[in-house]
Amino acid sequence: MEITTPEQARNEIKKWLTENQHQINEIKDENANFHFEIDYPLASQKRQRIIQPKEYPGLIVLLNGVSLAPEHLEKLKKMKEEKREGFYSEIRKDLIFAENSYDMNLDEEGVAKQIQFSFEFYFDALTKTNLFKGLLLNHRTLLYIVTKFNDKFGVPVMPTMPPKEHGIAGTTLQ
Image (cartoon, rainbow, N blue to C red; front, side, top):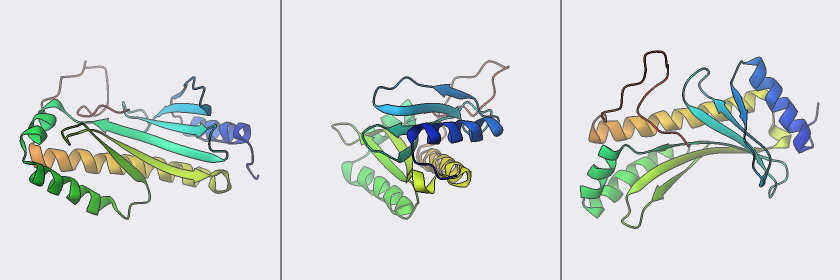
C-alpha cells in the first residue's frame, strides 16, 4: 500500500508499533499531524519520539536525545576550550557518516548540555523496516554518546531506581 497522507502514515506506524508490543503515548502537538512517544528498546525506560511535522508534508522524524550527567558537565566546564573542542571534534568525526543526524546543544560557554539524535525520511520510504532501522540507529548513537562520555569522564553516580522498575539508569532522554 502506498502511503500518501499523514493519517495513513499514523495508522501504519501505530499498527507496527502495536504489533511489536511497544508502549505508545500520543502527544498533543499543534505543530504535528501526529506525535508518538514510545519505549525503545522495547519495555525499557528509554523513549523515542515519532513525529510528522505539519510544516513538512510527508516527512517523518524519529527523535531522541540525552542530557549530560552533572558530573560530566562539571568536567567539561573545567576543560580548556581547546581540549573540549578536540573532544567534540572526535565525536563529530565518529558520527559524520552515520545515517542519522545529531545536534549538540551547547551553552554560552561552549559546554554541551544535551545531545539530540534524529532520523528523517519521507512517506515514500515509510516501511516497517525503515521505521525500526531509524529507531535502532538513534539508539546506537545514544549508546555511543553515553559510552564516549563515560570513557572520558567516568561513569556518573546515578540515583538508584526502585526495585520493581527496569531500564538503564544513567541518561535522561528527551
